[in-house]
Image (cartoon, rainbow, N blue to C red; front, side):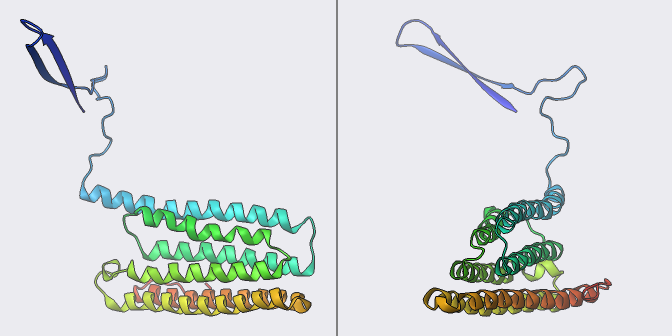
Length: 254
């Protein structure tokens, strides 16, 4: 590091001022000959690549785990005080949703790697944190179905944007595995949109036809579970195909 020192002296009168500029090294040598604040490893293109590969997936999985841990704690807190058949089914549905979220991010971090930006860092907070409020809506059919509908639409937008952020460079210039990955993202997007529309309709029915609220609630759970089953089934199939393309043994539901 460099330090700059300004030495201002009055020479010959108030209107004459001499300024001395000196540059000094602010890094000090320690007794063992090392430099204070010295680098363990100098920066380079190879070092930046390796650090991004090491830090990026671990950071994503850690943040997702923390957010899902908060959601799981709130889910348990709001489930056990006043359990009912509907609340039990809604809680189990949310638990499976948490598992699917973790599964998707884990799979994506295996296939894709890039130097993270602010957008990448904020995405887990913006999307995964939307899974926290449903824990407060247990037993409230219109709110629960409506929020899950909005959540699925948000997730669909995030999943579809993954197509843009997975250029052919991630696949070594080979277009076939890239197309497998893009096909998976499109399939997940379409399934999420259909599930969101169905849940939104059930939320409206629960709001304006409260006489059948219990049935709208259980049907909403079935719709959410059906969407999750679709997600897992498509991901297991496509991920097994991608792994098989590169000669890695990873059969569906291994």
